[in-house]
Image (cartoon, rainbow, N blue to C red):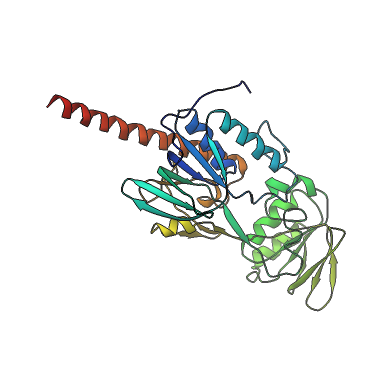
Length: 325
């Protein structure tokens, strides 16, 4: 990357154009976009990315397989090169004061911003199965596009918790001939489901999965309540995904819900129902992969800059009118 030396326009230590909460793909993409337009930007991040357990990021053009930590490090460097500032920590509270939004950090410091972008991601609510958390992101998976190639040809179990289990069966069956559907807590299979499973030669195991047995970090088997074990190398689940939306709710925001989880609803640019507040990435789209989150950050950053530019132009017109009156 070419060296860039620039100072954000009208940046101060305690008031910025835009505060971005969350320094993942969405937040950093927005930071680059805004800083390149000479906006003063602060990114506040706690350093707890959702994809930290994963070995690599996939389907990201030009960065295929890059380690999540390396991607974040490169993104930070790019944003900082254009003048964005990084703060480590959490935002404990947000309130509105006049035209500003005031962020209170966990360490007690405060930061004022004209706009805020929530790129706070989500948390996964995993099924209540012993051992599932320890293997999450390595041998317990949810997305065939994020992890499917890495388990191709292996013995893959599908843990049925919702009607989405049949969809996962279809997608992972593309990657392996050795698929086992554990009905667990999913709704009763229909006659069409049974015909599909038979045609695809998918093994079906009735009963609840009690635990996952592993050795040295490697998944070995799914163990049912009755003690029966079924050998598998990977397990796919459909977690319920809950947006990290506490700050939005503090400002009076209400959440939306779909079959995959709970999220902040926005327009196509990321603008929420609350003035001055935007959202990008998994907090607004629980199914977004890294590439989609980065795109949403770019869109939100551009739209925020456009809104601020329009606001500043109107203020300039009003000031000129006052001078010439």
